[in-house]
Length: 241
Image (spheres, rainbow, N blue to C red):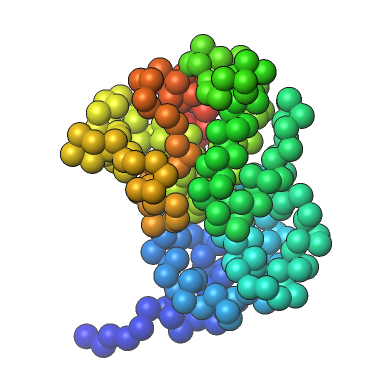
């Protein structure tokens, strides 16, 4: 039997982009190494490719294109930033929260900063008392606006190749049959009975375990995370993702 390089390796840049965009999520992940290996060849095509995506969706391909465009300090990066100064993805807030800093951190791959911003946003959504005390009570989650929790999750999903976000964590919990003790090691938050040390031992990159971010403090138990994952907005995204 004759063998040779995979079709994606011999395809033109345009053909590779088209194949990647039209593939299933599983196929996309298998093509990612080719996309990354040919990033310099693909980058000049990405502004046009991005224009064909909906900024009101959360297809992580668009987030990947944004990250690749921002990866070099050149005219392509400048064109993207000039065209979308507040971030490419359209996200809104019912509480007047500006999501541009979070979107910038995620798009630039600054995941530790993005995690800290997310914690700050959750405190803002919980109210002035949560901001003052520095943490959120589980009882403060239910009144949080669905629009904002949806925006937070869309940002994390879009800029993590679909690997991070509340909805991802919720689907993993379902896969663990609701067993929190099984979820923690799967997220990389606990190993051999010991909680992962924050922030030094966490993996602030796309090589982290699926669902690794955003972090939710478990030192007061699971009730806060349980409340977040059971919020109607997050439940809807868990079911439709």
